[in-house]
Length: 362
Image 1: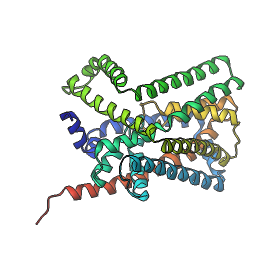
Image 2: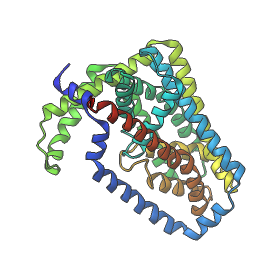
Image 3: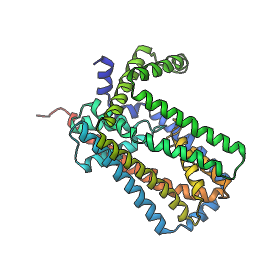
Image 4: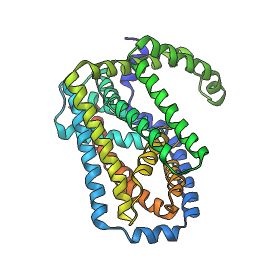
């Protein structure tokens, strides 16, 4: 193992977040500004009025469905951990998952959760960092097939959607590009050499640009070592997920179930404010919303996803104030409350890790 690999394994993830707190704060301020602009256009009074009409039964159902998704997610990750190592008990896996959700929700592109899972497994349970990171990336691999199939379905359904030809072309092109991208990721994920070649080629082309905008002295060799480390972890996780057919089948079925429940939950959020969105439009817009959430721009794609939903639901005659009200109900269950729970979970584990690292007073 290279010295760079060892440094990554020994890195304090909480220190990493602390070192990048300025970037995190700036990204949240940008998201807040975007949400403020959307709210101003939709009308704050109209949004509040729509929220006042919220059906409490549908609101509760929204939380029940989101909770079910988290339970399935924890079960899926535990399946992988049992395959590659001895998994912690289910309750511990669930709490660690919430801590990783906190990491995902405060970093653009949901990039912080998987390393945090590996870090917690190593510090709390003694699981090697490579195994923990491979398990978390393998967990994500299960989502590729459902995502591609749902994206293809959305691309087909949009042909029957009564919208302008340009909107159809743009949305369809976005879906197709994403399908191609994820297909390449899956292909590269199964071939370590190709994955390294593609990633290092891209990194080498953009490295001079980052040298101009950063004040730190960075050597490409150090970056390439880290990239190779994470590429190897990803390909390990990918092949590991395919190795056990039983776990693969169960994992993919769980992923389909989670996506179906999540799509149903979005429908319930609109029902909560008294609106029934067309099913075909919902599938298309839901898929596009997922695509937007993958962009590594703002934490949780706050503001970007809302702007996308407002623009696309307007095509089917649903006003911006209603969309924003439904989005707030959605975010309450899928982002705000889980982030708060995850923050408590991360703080809890952080205290344990700090206590364990203190020298014995005796």
